[in-house]
Image (cartoon, rainbow, N blue to C red; front, top):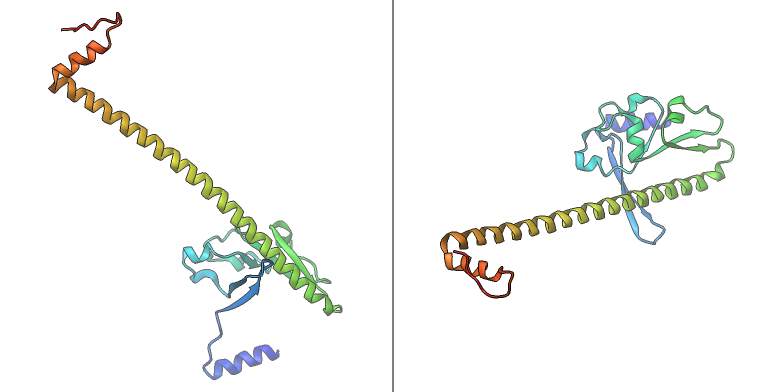
Length: 194
């Protein structure tokens, strides 16, 4: 109630609600990692949408209406799904059917909130590492296949150039063709095929 009253006061004063914020979190390797927290991903470009690493799922499928990937099963194969609820509440049926991690808050043991927050950040960091490993493997496979294609096309180009050179020599330099025939003689003595 207080929060909605404050929002109404801000709205009356002409202050717009923030649609995104940036927070920085120290990773386990000591580096600082910025995260952009957004309220509505509908206006994101495809490139920005592909950078989403986690989604807090409420339960109803309408939450994903208009998203680039609006099917929750597909979405939660790509991003970390998180559902936050109190420990005395029933988990929505949809949440149990999706690849979503359920974090339960205690109403009476609020001192456990800190460990829940740590659990969230660990899960997120693990998920990002899996994405990076998968991306590196895909990139490596893609690179090696493009290298193979390059080698194949390079060898085909060389073979094609050699064929053209031989054809050119046969048609424009008959003596070269005769010399080639001489080198192919099997009895060791140079002979000419004319």
